[in-house]
Image 1 (spheres, helix red, strand yellow):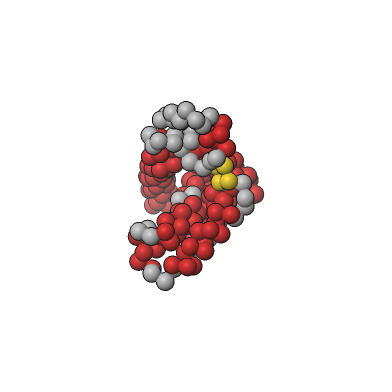
Image 2 (image 1 turned 90 degrees about the horizontal axis):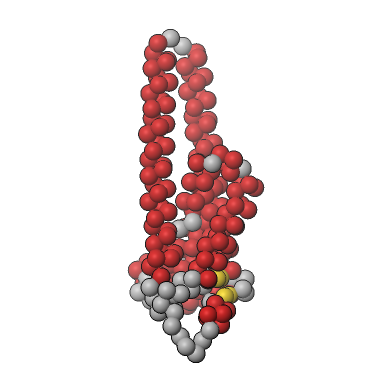
Amino acid sequence: MIPNVRKTENFTQKQHMFHAFMLSLALVYVVMMLCLLFLERAFNEASILCYREENVSYLNAVQSHISLTPLGTTKVFAKEILRNGTDFWALLTGFSEAGVAFYNLFGNVVLFMPIGIFIPYFFPRYENFFRFAPLMLAITFSIESVQLLTLTGRFDIDDIILNLIGGCMGCILFLIIQGIISLFNKNNMVEQSEF
């Protein structure tokens, strides 16, 4: 019986180490996203911190940063990728208009996948996909709103859609991995109880 207790203690210690690792990853991710979404653009000429245009009011500047046509930007980017998509290296390096379009479309999906992993991991209430999706929508809507109000980005409905898809893909990936781990743990428990 003592060896089983020791295995359980080691397992919980491994769980704590993994939890600390995930927390570290989440913190690095949050800092990276804050830099990418807000700080990188905070000091450009169009941001609210540097906004000095005398001929254009703040309200007009905000209105010019809104795109509410669903899939409008995505269609433009997709056409650009398809038009110049034969040069795979240019797509990956981003040194062309097609590369910029590629990074914009896939970046908006891939960069938000970790949210779909971290939130259900740290907040088990959101392990349910149908609880997670509205939260992800609120998060991405909030990010777009802050970018709009600070003029550090555009409020683009396409970004909301793509970010939501990325977060939901991350959540689905988390649920699949969690299911595999549960099956593995059940199999190990069955094997241990047989001894």
